[in-house]
Image (cartoon, rainbow, N blue to C red; front, side, top):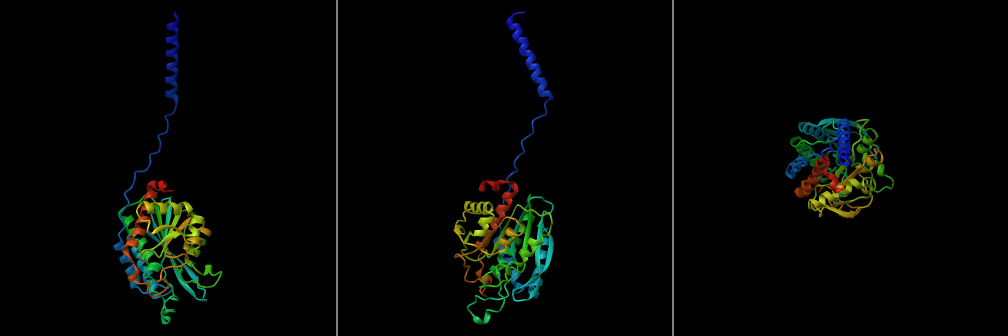
Amino acid sequence: MNLRTIIYALFALCLIQIMACKTDTKPESIPVETKQRVKVPSFKADSAYVYIEKQLSFGTRVPGSEGHKACQDWLVEKFESFGADVILQPFIANIYTGDKWKANNIIAQINPKHKTRVILSAHWDTRFMGEEDPDPKKKNEPIPGADDAGSGVGVLLEIARQIQSNPIDLGIDIILWDAEDQGQRGVQGAEATWCLGSQHWSNNKHRSDYNPIYGINLDMVGSKNPRFGRDDYSMGFAPVVMNKVWKLAKTMGYNDMFTDNKTGPLTDDHVVVNQIARIPMIDIINQPDTNRFGDHWHTHNDDMSIIDKRSLKVVGQVVTATIYKESDGSIRAFE
């Protein structure tokens, strides 16, 4: 046998062994395919506007009032008509004045069995007094609350309607906080007198195993030319969430509203959700100036005349885009 024959024989033997090894080896795992990009539905500002009007038609929504109860019933019915599972979470709101009011957080669960969840929230009560009103006779009367807080609720109702028409691969919990706006002003250390509904929920979540990936809170999002800046608590507790939402808003052309202005520490529902419930949550709230809200804030001018449809459109479209891009994973490009 010559050398060439020996070499060919050895090569053939090696080839047979290699083929045998490949036959015995388990097939390589197929890479997980990325989700197909979803189409983000168009948020309808006209619809959100009508939902705000409807809230005001019940009158002021101070906890315990007739208008509050009528609005609550309508909100539950509306969310259920959009296919959500609704939970009422009753509690007693201990107001700083010594009053004890019956209150309810409203929790609308969309895709309740989905493990990956996001909170969208706003408060739905209205303040029992208009202490900033220029008319002294009106300072002790409850305000209409179109922007504070009808606007956030109107936006979330429209998002719920859009999800029903455009199903999403994500669990969404829309939580409407009660008794948020009944706190004491001008007194140091009175922060705990505000945000009573979110405090109650954070200490008594509607599910013991509840662990959403993050939350977005809306407050006063409906007036003309708002400035949504970066408050200290959002940036301190949930910087990744705030960065990706703000970056997404800017790529959508909304730099005029979603700014990089630092607006300082701000007491709102997102603070207690971060601190007590340990859920990263950001706040989208209008602060034209640092530590100051619009001129209509806590006055009787907070009526439908203050609501601007472009503001509703911008906020609603940004939040809608956020959750749909979260559902297909493309939101990571904005982190």
